Image 1 (spheres, rainbow, N blue to C red):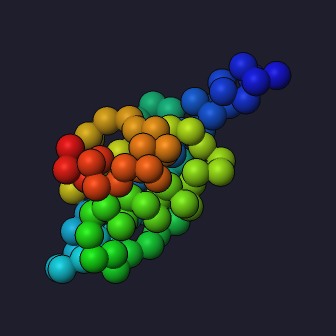
Image 2: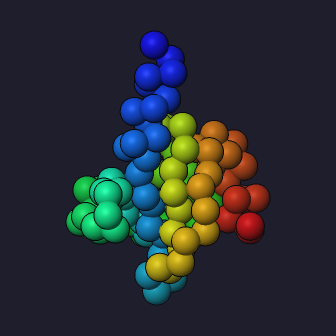
Length: 96
């Protein structure tokens, strides 16, 4: 059963778009679709003083449902991250 849950999570792995807005940070979340289709965002939050605070909120918002996420920063793909990393070491993840 656990293998099946993991397979479903991989199919539904969200994409988090991080960006700076003036003096704060914001993010949106969207679910990827096949064949390169970019769907509209399904969740948005912002006004975080630092990128680390923004990453913490991402982890809180998605942490119960997903283990990993795809991360984009200012429109550039920066890879896949464990939500546990965002929750436990947001400053280090932000620095990377």
